[in-house]
Length: 253
Ligand SMILES: Nc1ncnc2c1ncn2[C@@H]1O[C@H](COP(=O)(O)OP(=O)(O)OP(=O)(O)O)[C@@H](O)[C@H]1O
Ligand SMILES: [Mg+2]
Image (cartoon, rainbow, N blue to C red):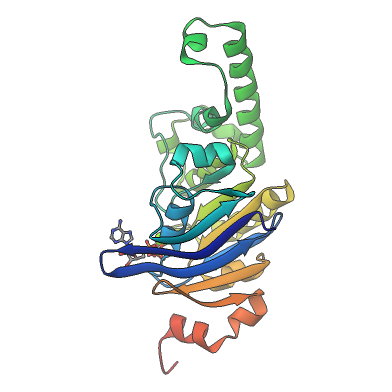
């Protein structure tokens, strides 16, 4: 069984089928990419998996558990973390604190524990900080640790988003256009980072606009267009699929 299984997943907004009958498997240890033109339904798929939207039909199964209807915080606790297409950092918190916040989903000390500074809360604080610093190191952000997130160069903010998502120790990481707004060199570097995240044992589902960027790193590529899956398979096959070429370049290309 795959780590994540989407079966005949549908989401309608009024008369619009934003996601129509999507079936997709994400095997543990893989990098799977979801590509497609603007408005194809890619981000909606993430919003369905993470419980922001309830599916109109179909099912989402993660490690044998059905996620349909689960609240976003429960989905995180179940082992799925994500980033957003538009950066969502705490601007006036430090880079280190942003990552520490991401770890909260895993902690057990209650609010009362924290207020009373119990031994459990203090031990957890230390553990959270230690792990956050490790992640900053992994993402080349150590020298920015005490800066406000809003003062980071844009490309670094993109990295910080991923670091924060990983702080909850997910088994599945959903990345929604992690390279949006960055320059080509930064994008290439990000793709290498995605590979090293996978090497750490985290499975990745990646949304990207630029099909060429994901080709080199994906085990499989799924192409959406107007909510429909028009192709899926290994990158080389998908790249040469006439429907994909047409969706990207328009008829007559
Ligand atoms: N909350 C919503 N209410 C109504 N329509 C929505 C909503 N969210 C998304 N849509 C519509 O669903 C379709 C798919 O949107 P989605 O954001 O999933 O596309 P996308 O593939 O992520 O596009 P992009 O590459 O531009 O990010 C679009 O037509 C969009 O306008
Ligand atoms: Mg999107």
